[in-house]
Image (cartoon, rainbow, N blue to C red; front, side, top):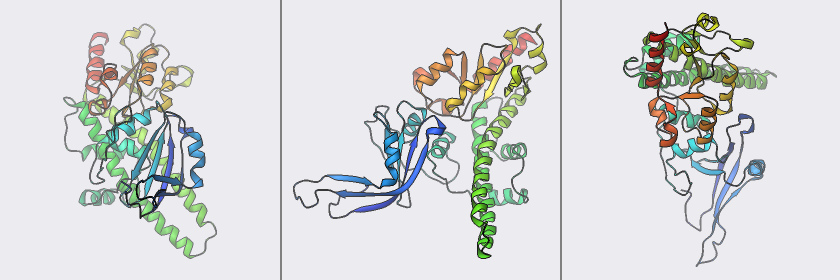
Length: 372
């Protein structure tokens, strides 16, 4: 990967990352690494070493025994060194992406194309690694930009547009495929639109720099923060929009984003918030569904929602969550729901505790036939 010629020394830019399931513990640094043979003058022995610059010292200090270390070489020749915390979901996800064994003893080189719509689970993990996919282009993207000349529309409008431009998959007979396809399409369109808008903003910023505007740096920072915040907030909202479209397709009664006890707001209450507050309606007829595109440590938040129910359901698009986390969810009577293709990123034991989307929808429809 880095070469084995003792007479050559490789020096490269490198991004060093430490990732864990606790978002506040994740950070990255930019620096350089050098690959060289420390015994180049010894004709009988080679000993290659990878030297990293001082910028990475705090990341190495944060790492510990059992953490995974991944070396990634990008197309431009630059490197990434990614340390994943031991026993974390992100460690599972990176191993899955690069087809590595759980023990970490296997090694493989995996080339990931940046063209077109790659599977959603792969997109998810690449985004965790901070790898930016090449922005889409072509006639479909030109049509998108022409459709929204004033910039990014509301998340609801954008989600509807993505579903309308997804190759038709019947959401009634194939809800798992439909949900993943809708999410892939919206992410595909979002990357294109985001790239177009950033290019416009950079052009305006270059004009401000040319004018020696003393606030140009602040404009750059505020612009970058804006796009980061918008991306995070819209990801969750788009997920909820597509779930709502599925519920409508299956003619399931629900209330969305209605407050329950202590002003906590679950994503979906079925069959309705009015029946939730009606103490004469049996609790067995109620269903609470939380939607979190990414769980991480936030899954426990749903335990404070819809206190009338002991059992809760959580739908996510996150691949390869750890077995310990799934066991913790089960102990709190949380049923995990994941689209089938992403569900397949889990081991056989964990899959027995995870429903696919079709199973959940059929279960809810059965309840509503009995209780309504």
